[in-house]
Amino acid sequence: MAEKKFRNIVTAEQLQEVTAGQLKTQPEPEPESDPVMSFTLRMRRSLVAKVDQAAAARPGSVSRNTWIVEAVSKALHSGSKVEP
Image 1 (spheres, helix red, strand yellow):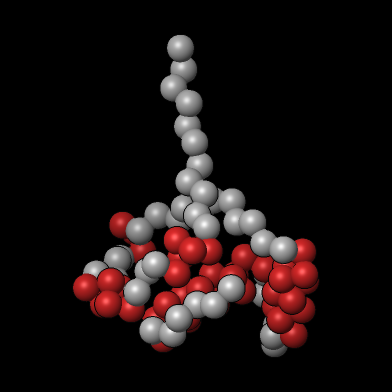
Image 2: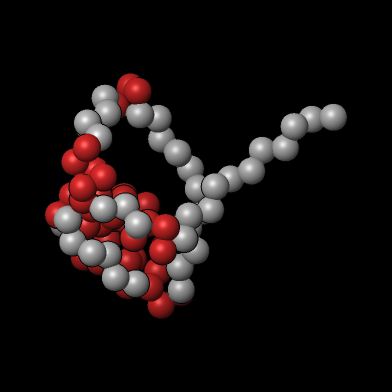
């Protein structure tokens, strides 16, 4: 029987649990040793629309995925608390 593989689903609350202190204790991984992980992100349609507007307004325009990744990274590196 084949082994089933499941995706990790990360909630907004779980993302908030990551603190600046936790990030500072971990060295920045090298790109080759830090593979990209794919997962499902659930958001309200109204929030997705705001993300799309912000991404489109940025010079050069960026994808929804790129905008979200950059926003999460910026929030975590700034040490600010991420609010829903």
